[in-house]
Amino acid sequence: MEVPKSPSKYKRIANHKLLIKFGLVILVMLLLFLGFYLESETGKLNASSSYTVVVDCGSTGTRVNVYEWMVGVEGTSKGNLPVLLHSYPDNTTRKSSLWKGSCQYHCMQTQPGLHNFVNDSLGVRQALEPLIVWAEQVVPREMRGNTPAFVLATAGLRGLPREDADRVLGDIEAVVKGHSFMMSKSWIRVLSGKEEAYYGWVALNYKMGTFDDNYPKSPTLGLVDIGGSSLQIVAEIDVAGDDVHVMKSRLGSMEHRIMAYSLPAFGLNKAFDRTVLMLRNNQSEERTASISELRHPCLVSTYVQNYTCHSCSGLASIYEKNHSHASELYSLRLTGEPNWEQCKELAIGAAMNSSSKVSHLTVSKNCQASSFSGTGNGIIICLHCSFLILLIHALQFL
Image (tube, rainbow, N blue to C red; front, side, top):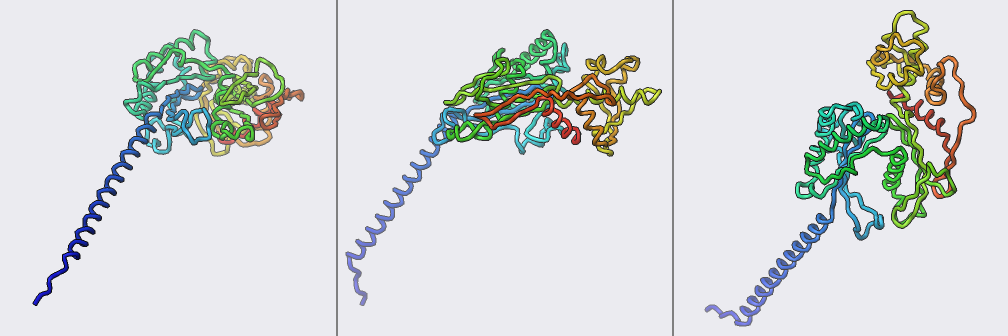
C-alpha cells in the first residue's frame, strides 16, 4: 500500500520554485538595467566626440589628417585641453591609393605640392578632391556638417608672389565648398614661418604629454623640423629675447614664451637642389660636352635615378656663369659616387656659403648661436650648423 506524501513537502517544493522564478526575474531586470545604462553612457560618449579635418599643403605634397577628439572629459590628464581619441590615417588605410610610397609614416597624400598649380584650378582640384573625399568616408555622415575643415599651406605657397598664392587659395576654397564639411575662408590660408614652427612645437609637446596636469614637472621639448622647402627651429625660453622671433602662448593654465625661427630655402629639397647646381657647375668645367649625368658624393654607389631640379631656375643666377645650357638644369641623371669628405664639403657649401664653388669653400667661424634655456631643456642651437648636421644625415638616405 502506497504511503501518501506529506502536504508540507509539496508546499516546500512550490516555495522553492517561486523563489527561483523571482530570482530569475530580478536577474533579468538587472541585466536590462545594466544594458540601458551602458547604452546611455555610450550615447553620451559618442555625443561628446568631435572630428576635425586638417589638410597640410606642403612643398612636396598635399596631406590630410582626420582627428577624433573630446573636450572636458573627466578622469583624463589633459586638464581643459582637447583629448585626442584617434588620428586617421592609420595602418588600416595603407591599402588606399592615396598612401604613396614616399609616405613612410602617418601620411596620406597627393603629389606634387599645390604651389605647382598656379592658374591651374583643375590641377588643384585633382590634388585636393581625393583627400577631401577620403576624409568624408572617415567622418560619420551625421557629424560632417559640424566638422571643421582647415586647409593650411606652408613654405611651398609661402614662396610664391602674393597674387599667385591667393589664386591657389581661391581654387582650394572652391573645392572645399563643394563638400559637406564646415568651412570658413579664414581656415584656408598660408601659415607664416613662425606659425608653422609654433604648431609643430605644440604638436610635439602635446604628443609627449608635457602639457598634462603634471606640467611643470615635465619641461617642454625643443623642435628642429626640416621640411621640403624650409627649416623650423623652436623652443621655450624664460629669458628676454628678440621680439621678432618670440611669441607668447597660453595652453591650459600655463603661459609659454616661445622662440621660433623659420629659415626659407633651408628645407631638404631646396638644399639638395643647391648641391646639384654646385656640382653641375664644378663638373661642367671638367668636361667640354654638355652634362646629362651628374655624380653626387652624398649618394650610395647603387643610386641611379632621373632627377628634376624644381628650384634650379631661381638658383641658376647664383651658381651659373654661363646659361647656355639652362635647359639641362631641370632634368638630369643622378648617379651615386660616395665620398664622405666631398659630401661634407658640399653640404657646408649649401648650408653656409651658397654662392661659393665646391672647390673654394669658405666657412664662417662666426656661426650665430641662439640660446634656449630655463623652462625648456637647455640647448644652444647654431642655426646654420644644425641645418648642416641634418642635411648630411638626410642626404645619405636619398
